[in-house]
Length: 110
Image 1 (cartoon, rainbow, N blue to C red):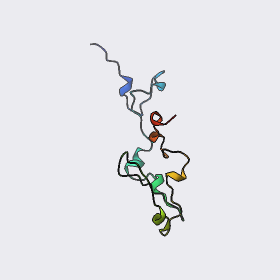
Image 2 (cartoon, rainbow, N blue to C red):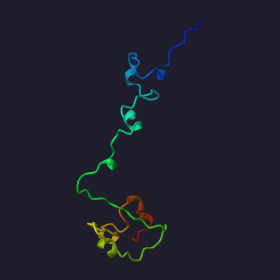
Image 3 (cartoon, helix red, strand yellow):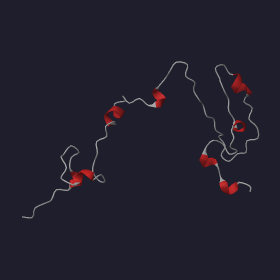
Image 4 (cartoon, rainbow, N blue to C red):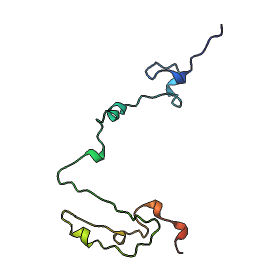
């Protein structure tokens, strides 16, 4: 009878490892220590934290892709009760916006 060698990649997570296998990571299932808390909803994320007097942010993007925005009138938004600040592209130092992916070097004038 041929003897079958046990494949170390298929060993249970809690099984003791043979010498030299403790560094083997690829193909070995690993227990995620935070899995149970995430599945049961016990994990707290940044969006779950509410502190007293905490300010919230809203990002409004154009619903029209590649549209040229000529003017933004933020006066009504700034006058709304509870609004601390309204930022537009004119308030930022970068011409193409706040996202690096929105900068297109191939279209910049030199």
